[in-house]
Length: 124
Image (cartoon, rainbow, N blue to C red; front, side):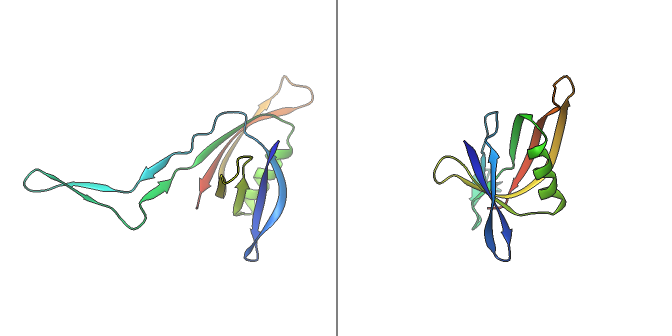
């Protein structure tokens, strides 16, 4: 089962097919933007900005790609394409851009295969 992927074109999301689900677990951290300050009396004060959290980048890993996904991600990066990825779990969607791709050529495989490691910068 793949994940649906959409590109942002002319102020709207256009269907761009699917990508395979990653082959390794996906960490989806959320970081608090709350700041702690030490007051002159030694006590702590906390400031919470209007945007209280920040979504960290995602690290995807795919094993045994035949080059199809590798080329698709390279095109997204070259074209600086804003993407929406809808996972197989209802309500879990990621919006952002691929910012790094590390294709590892599995030279002992016939036909040629790739292990892909990609960074997806979340912009939601």
